[in-house]
Length: 194
Image 1: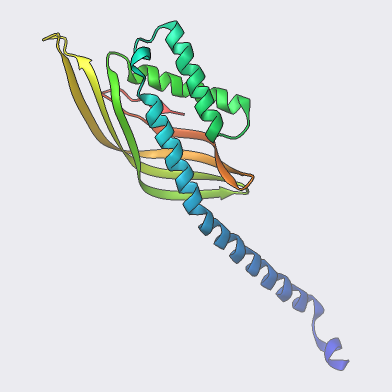
Image 2 (image 1 turned 90 degrees about the vertical axis):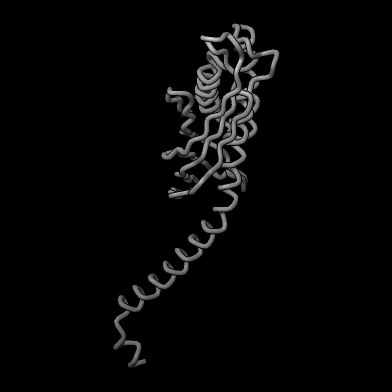
């Protein structure tokens, strides 16, 4: 009993709280490390989806109002599969994707588009959300009509990009897209996907 009276109870309580806090933080860090593989996979699936949306079906390569609406509907449907359930976020992202598709297919027809994550520079966790910052390689093939010869030519563009980022949120154990900022640079004009 005399020992208990001599021990500084505040110091003992502080030490216990610190030990519990350290154990908790180690557990959170372990969970985040385990989540990084799933996060990267979700990012790659999303980028693959955008790559596929960049290549228009042959019957929609003429960007008429009717085709534009069909493309918009297709983009909306595809984004709903990978994004959080927020109509405003989906609509905003859909509008940006449509603009990128329209700009990318202006005066040319994208025949192949492939963006690969080169290096993830940072994972910024904030609760159940994470911002993934990375650099990537973008390879596009496209057809266009040469104005001098009036012949159709197939060209390819390969480049490295940096500053790409995707924000994800964990929903029911699965990482879903909230927002993205992807650099789709093509043929002397900067095209960004927000």
